[in-house]
Image (cartoon, rainbow, N blue to C red; front, side, top):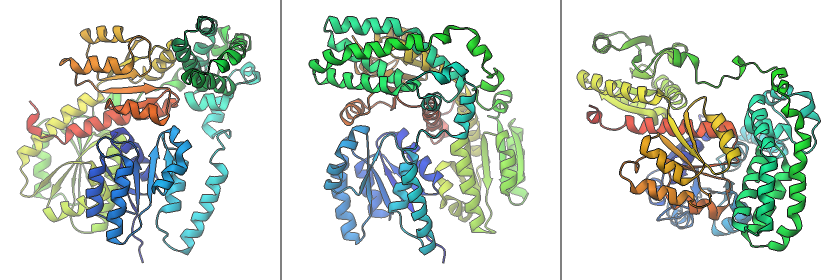
Length: 570
């Protein structure tokens, strides 16, 4: 007997968080629905049955605990016991027992570790059969044994480690595996290491001056900056000492600061001699990295050819209606690639187009759903737009699949061909906008992190860097970026003040803002979310995590716009 596929409800007021969780669930073969508020969660749970709820603790209006209590009543009336997992920030790790006492089944810490999520899924989702349970137990044991085994390098990390200069592998107090994992490539790691090294003398003197003058506000910001940079390059002990002093400054524990600051400065300055070989220009030249190997551009084929006016038309039979659609689209100067409804053909041609039109036919309902699942994954991962045309019953079958969430528009027979063409014109416009290289304002008072993040993003985006609020507000008078990544903690004018200035100006009020923060404790993150930014990123995030979050952000902007009425297009 075929087992029912598990379904999870994701509840989070941050769109980016919902999409990341949805993607992680999909990679585990689990379907999901997403809502952004506690009230929507309750409505969904009244109408549908779920095997698991992933519930954000802190949400506006109705928070996670209030939602939890209301869910318990709904499930009690239904006679079911659904596991409810709280997902919260790093600070929540200290309060896991409190969350469980409140009624949560378990707790996941943001940013969500894919291994931890897999463990939760295997632990709490329904068991299929005895064999599956045995496999689950084996997998759970494997995950428990390896959950903290971050010191074991992957094959990719090992390859990058081999590219590092020999002298660097003998430097003590540096975890090269962690550094490479954070920066993704050996060349990016060397760049980050050089930025760290070249600023040691200046930044150590600044911390020392703030310490002597008892300027604890600036002291806290400086050791916070050192903590983030030390973690990035893999100097764990320096990172931990800086974190401890940041916490001491936060708690006004000046005895600890006076006792431990000299040791911190001594260790910090010791890296001047430890990393002095990096001054040798030949270090990077001798590295086996070549320019061509390190290109971080999007798919080259996408840049060489504009696919925004190319359409993949998938149909079972080349009948009169499909042929009429093809002709009308070609008459409107679209390039139409017409292929049969076969997975191999779809995969072969997917890189050639940005718009997909699917004409399902009820020969085999399971085949339609299989095709839709494939198209849904393609559209989510590769930022393509999907339209359905055909008989109403066939479209209904297609829309009952998990790929339905990526459908931008449906055109049941009798098909309004002119409307379809007008809408596809609008989608082509959106796609051209999506592929346009986006302009990002990056705002951070930490010059080291600013340099590293600029290096990471510049291959994909047009990045303008600012070190304070006054400069970024001046920059907005001349240019309107597609996104502002804004450090939350800065002297003089912090992130919240800058955001208020941007939001109250009609010319800049619609610019999306993602907060950047080095802290992920509960109170800090909740405070950030009160300002309702379009997202937040942790400075401790690895390069690929940040790039993936930005890709998802711009993809979802495209997807939202594609669902607007095509009449808005002029």
